[in-house]
Length: 303
Figure 1 (cartoon, one colour):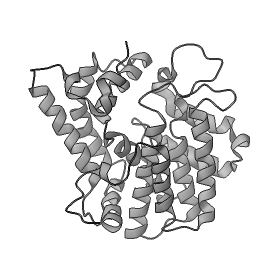
Figure 2 (cartoon, rainbow, N blue to C red):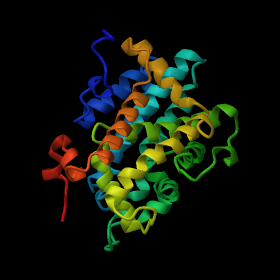
Figure 3 (spheres, rainbow, N blue to C red):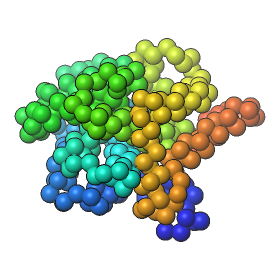
Figure 4 (tube, rainbow, N blue to C red):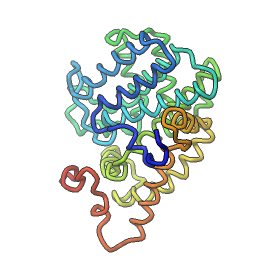
């Protein structure tokens, strides 16, 4: 690929359809591992898609608009790219560990899904403890998923690394490699969502989720938008500490697979932050008028 023509992450694949993202995950996985190992990932993803659609007995469909299926897929894709970069730069991660990593990405936010008896509010009310609920979901559905117990335990540890207040260093992993994989998932979760082409528009959804959950750090949706720049400063520090610089493997992936020697995730996030700063400085119009990707103003704003 001609690196002079590729300047944005969104140009790599058409992410408007879940199938496109999942097929890219599969392609990246098969660079390193036999096809037979991907069957488990495919099975779990099909289950997840049905879960989010409300087609699994005992559960309601996903009703959180920020933490939705697209968010999970973007995390899964980011995980695949970091895994690929690590395998290129270091030694290849054993296939079963790679499968467990991607499985954890698939299930890391199922804690937002409500059970069908729950008639109060939406899954957003679980924001503060959705990580624990995601881990509990796997325990409840271990037999249904036909998941080996030793895999379930490790996948739960990986999921725990996606909690912003959790410390990977205190999680009891069996090896340094497992700890690094947990860090990889934590980094991928943030890279995927913050580089989303419509990330700034979706902050409206995130504010709604926080409000329902009783998170009191933000007074208005615009307050959340403004504070996102400072939040990213915290996240960048977390990338280099808790997440053990695993985000840098993205650049290795993009160089090898796309001929672009850049971390396109960070470039995209930096553009988002720059746009937020410009919005704050420009008081000529309401900030919503400046966020109109995917016809957001008409399509997404709810009463």
